[in-house]
Image (cartoon, rainbow, N blue to C red; front, side, top):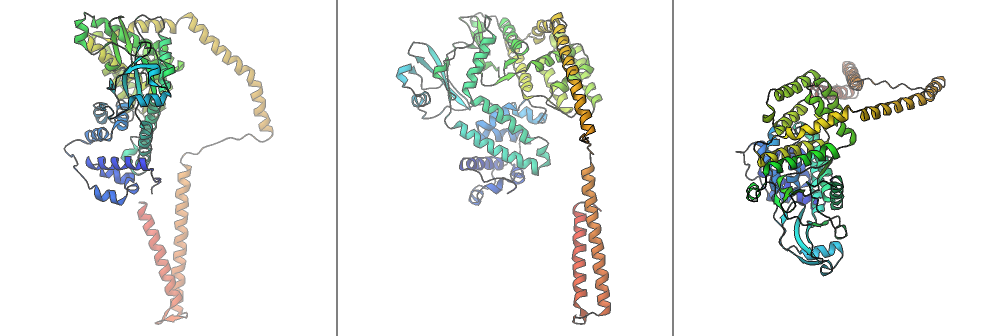
Length: 560
């Protein structure tokens, strides 16, 4: 079974769908190599012969089409990894960027019953009315407008029925196939399919926890407390659960609706500047940022002259150390100090396997010089970040998932700014933050705190040094000091030596059998069969079989 357990009923349905779609788009080789046929009943395979292969499309186009046809879980998987150049080739990234989350709203969905069941309430006790037609529908939930008994208008984000079970089944299928592909396909293994699925699992589970989204909203509101440029919607915790969020309904204009904004004499240039400033504050000041700031999630509130972010399911977090490293990265980048950039990248990275430091230095230098040769008003952050990600990919540097979310979000925000103002340049917004960052880095307060921390570390080292030395000396005296020495490549050498020894032993046995059998035949040792000594004949047959096996083994392992 290639290590694949028998799937559950729900998983089997997802396997059936997956097999059918893969076959339709000409990926039977994936089905065969992954061992997927093993888990499908023969009756199904007979009923579903290969359909249209769509061979006129490229391989990457067909992968995108497969994800679209497989439904929400797979579309979201593609969307999340549409900016992971560290994992996937550029051609596939380009196709994944085309994925759109068009999900029809639920048919025959009893909204009232779902709310009453989830909150364990009677609708009339809390709500005056609720609109049955959803405002929006996505892969995980759909949103309905309602009115509370106190007259307040709210939006109810309701998780789709059984979506958790469907996603769990999809993830189980993904994991099984990813594991089999890594085991049986060298080409697929290079894409690290299991790592992709595990990262997706973490992201999707966070989005499914609606109470966690409420925590995000409240934390976001606290971070911007007192800032008159932003409005954060109110959340009703008493009417929310892990599958339902009740929050204030936001009446505003999407930031992408340029004509509506201009019709109301709203200055789009100011909106672009304020929006990007608010986002940079999230990243560089708070270390807690909206990970999906596309135009549909950013509204202009015309009655308040404020901006409002929506949908806090996917948020990015920067640890204090990462935030400081990111600041150092920006500073050294602007100063073109490549030699200091590389160790910072290694500190930030989740994993590094840099094959050639000189090449990395040259790649980064080309990027920095390219920016230097461009006038400040013509610098495009999106293009710069895309080139930066390509350099990371080409030099085997993998950043944490949160930083890829940040890069994607910054590219989106620059795009939003350019739609509002064709002359928009994000570097203008970055200037005050860079100046503030420089002041912080070289301010007396930070230098004092940093040196104080080092002094404390040194003091701790001095305090513990005598005890550590005593422990080492005692182990030396008692003969308990163990030095671990690793020989790289020794195991492979031992395996090769063991195989060679076994073959030598076989050769000696074969030679002994052949010589012994020859002596028996010459001596005509009874019993005889048709004048041929039986024991001698058996010896010759055995030596021939053993010799044949040794030769097959040598050719099979290409060791000749």
